[in-house]
Each structure stands twice: as C-alpha cells, then as structure tokens.
Length: 375
Image (cartoon, rainbow, N blue to C red; front, side, top):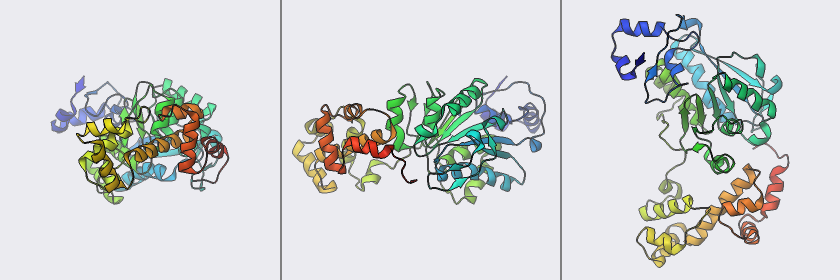
C-alpha cells in the first residue's frame, strides 16, 4: 500500500491512527521512510506490529573518529536533546562510540568519553560517523569493516563533516548523491569519482545521509525531526537554538561569489565562476573575456578595479589554493596534484607554489604528515 504524504496530512484522524499503529516496532513510519525514499517520493507502508512510541525512542549512534570536529558533532546531537525537552518525553536517545571504546580527542584538543565500543550498540540504530582533521588516518580497517557489516544489514548510516570520506572509503556512497565540507570537496572527487558529489549543506539519499561541517548537521537533524515528529517540533527546536533560518538540501555551503569577494558585479562573478569550474583545464584570459562579451583589456581593468590584481594572478591563486587542499587532504603524488590543477610542468608548479606559499609542495606534504598541534 502506498500513501502519498500530502494525502496523509489531510486524512481523517481515524485513518491517521491506523497508519501510525502499523509503524515499525522501533522507528515510526515517517522516520523510517527516510531510509528508503527521497523527501519528494511516496512512502511504502508495510504491515508492522503495533508499538508504544513513548517507550521506543529513535536511537542514534555517534561514531567519533579521532580529531573529530566538535562544532559539527554538537550541531547534530543538541537538536535531539532539545527535541526531547520541548516534547516533554524521550523521542530520541543516543550513544557515543569509538573503536575499542576509547576516549576520543576532538580537533580542538578536548577529550570526549564514549559510552560503548563498536559491537555494543543496538542493531537498528541510525549511525552517524563524525569526522574532522586527518580523517584518512582516523579511518581504520576495523571501522571500515564494521560499517560495511552494518550496511549489509540495511542500517541507515550517515557522515558528518569529513565523515563522508569514511563512508566513501567503505564503499557506502558508490552511486549515491552526497556532500562533504567544501574544503574537502575537491579531494573527495579525486579519490572517489563514482560519487555524485554536491555542495549542498546536507544530502539524504536512500539510507545514506551526509552533511557538511560547521552548523550544517543542525539543518540535517531538523529535517529528520520534521519528518518523524512534524515541523512544529523542528521549529521549536530551532527557536531554542536561536536558529532563525533553517536550510534545506537545496541550499549550498558557501556564500555566493559576490558575497565572498564583496563585489556585486555580474560579469566579474561569472568570470570567477568559470575560473572555479576550470581548474584542471585553465581558460585563457581572451576566452574568459569572450564568455562575458568583453575585451581582454576591459576584463583586466575590471579585475584591477575590484580585486586589485590581474585575472591571470587571481586565476593562479585559485589553482594554488586547490593544489594546497589536495596536498593536505589526499595521498595524491605532487605530480598528480600539479596535473589536477592545470600545471603541465612539475617544476613550474613548484616555482609558483613557493612564490605564493613560501614553501615547496614537497615540504608542504611533509609538514602535513607530521603530528601537529590540533587545529
């Protein structure tokens, strides 16, 4: 039996009651629907034994990776606490777990005690992998094996901040839409090209959830609360957190180009957009000018006036910034990084990198490999 959500909201109270009584024994049907369909799809209903929802809260497991980002974790767990508080009953419960049940250090140096090890959690819980700095090093074979095993049982699994990289490494995002913090976006594309990566604040695709870092997990959790308990509770939680603008999966992570550069000039913004989308195969200044129906000289004056640099220099800085992200966040060779950012000559790449960052790509990679202070 397939029930359209719009029709459900208009159904008579007795029909609503019958539908709720057929909910899953652990999760109510609205929350469970997120594990199978997209928000704009219909919900497939199946016969389930009756359940007392007041005694069966949704359970979320937060898998904390070493040097995870505290802000992103807090943005995910606090809406659950507040939902319980506003509702006046335990709608949600949660566990903090780590490999071996060990205390985990945040990226800011604080330590977080966990409540269980990997094999000590409910089998029907939603798992959220919380990543942060050096996620590649924090993603161990034991964690990958555990996630794959849970995925084979149909568990709903998500990644917060760089936790999406761990899911990708486990093969859980193959063919899925997903997102990750914008700073790690390019690295994930290079490592896992089979993923349909977006720049949305969060993505729910089937039984996989991903959200960018910072406050983006808050928007994802409010979306889950909306689906399981209704928009009124989600709005009340947002009010408690002084969060006046809830974002959807259609919102992007970064500010618009005009907002970022502090200039609202449509042609300038369009040229920069072309530059950002052609890092591996740079476009010549004359071709950039043609894209916005300007002469090369006019384009030069435009950049000098608003950004105090030439288009060529601005383009080079964009490419070097991308190169630095790849050096620090992937295991790509320096030559591969050079090619991925439009440099055909490793020596030219090294020369430009040194001029901009006052170090060579090789030294940058070596410095990143050391055990630095938390950031």
